[in-house]
Amino acid sequence: MIHPKRFLILSSILACMVSPSKLEAQADEDLLLTFKGHKGPVYSLAVHPDGSTIATGAEDLLIHLWDPVSGEILKTLEGHAKPVKYLCFSNDGRYLLSAGSTDIRIWDLEEGGYKKYVKHVTHVYNVNFNSDASRFLSTSLKPKFIEWDRKERQVINEYELHDRSCLVADYSPDNTKIASGSLDRTIKITDAETGEIIHSISAHGENILSLDFSPNGTLLASASMDKNIKLWNVETGKIHKLLGGHAHAVVYVRFSPDGRYLLSASYDKTAKLWELSTGNCVYTFVDHTDGLYAADFFPDSKKLATCSNDETVKIYKISQRFFAEYYYFTDLQNDMQESGLFEERRKGEKKDEYKQRQEKASKFRKELHEKYYRMHLGGLNN
Image (cartoon, rainbow, N blue to C red; front, side):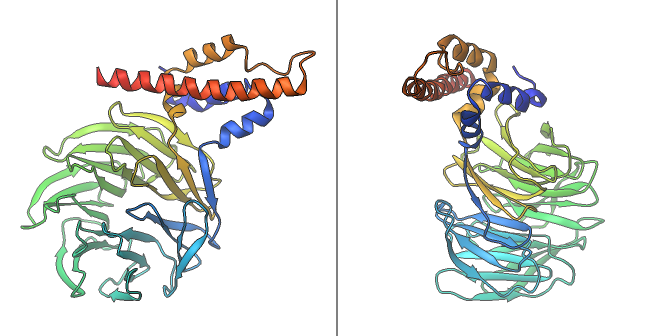
C-alpha cells in the first residue's frame, strides 16, 4: 500500500508516462467545472438535495444559485449587509438558511422572499436545520447556542454547555441528539428533548470548527484547528478513528449521503476524500490556490464541490482512478508499461498511428482503473 504522503508524487510519476498534452488532460479529467461568479472569497456553499443547484455565499454579500453543469447563475439573492459565511438547504429543498455577521435569514425558494431571525449580538458562525426544517440551530462567538422555531421565528432553547465560544452545532439525522463543538476543545452530545448531556468529550487539542453526523447517526465527525479529524462513536462517546494528514486547520467535514466517504476542507488549500471503511485518504484535491472554507457532496455521492479564498468554487467527480492509483499503483504502472501504449512517439510512427495509440492508451487506462477499483471493492467485501 502507498503511504498517503507519497500519493501525489506517485500520481504525478504515473501521469508523466504519457505526453505533456496527456498529462494536462489526466490532471484535469476529474475537475468538472470551476465557478467564478463571485467577487471576493467564497465562504460558504450548499448543494441542493436534488443536486440541481448549488448555493454559494461570499465576500461580495451575494448568494448565487447556479447550475452545477453549465455554471450559469440561475438566481441571485441579495440583502445581506455583511459577507455570507454559512448556508444550509432544508432536506426538501424549499428553504435556504443563510448567515452573515449577526444576520440570519431563511429564504423561501418556492414562494420567494425571506424571514429574518434576530437574537445574536456577535458574528454567527454556523446554522443547521433539523430533518424537517421545523427547527434550526445557530452558533456565534458566545458560549451558548440557540435553537429556533422556523415558522414562529422564536427562540425555543438556549443551550449553555460550553466554557468558551461554541462555534458549531448540528442535529442527528433522527433529531434525537444535538452535537456541539467549542473553543473549549470539547464536544457535547445532548438529548434534544431533555437537554441532558449524554457525552462530554475532551475532543481536540485546539478549537473545534466543524461537526457532522453520519447518515445513519452512528458516527460524528469533528474537525479542528489542530489539523486533525476525528470520528466518534455516538453511542459510547469513544473515538472511532483519527484521520490526520492536513497541514493546517481543518475547517469543514461532511459525510457522503451513502455513508462511504468523508470530505474535509482545510486552510492548507486542499480538500481530502477519506474512505470510511479503511480510514485512508484516497485522494487530495489540490486545484485551489488559497485556503478552503467549505465542501459538500452531491446527493448521489459521486460528485463534490469546494469553495475557497481564491474566489472560486470547483466541482469534481469521484473517479475509480483515485482508488486504483492509491491501492494498486505498482501493478497499474507495470500494466501500463507492459502494454507499450504509453511510450513517446516512436521513430517512424506516423502522426495518425500515434494518435490512434494514444486513444487506445486512454481507453486501456480507464479499463485498468475499473479493474483495480473492482478488485479493491472485492477486498473490502471479503
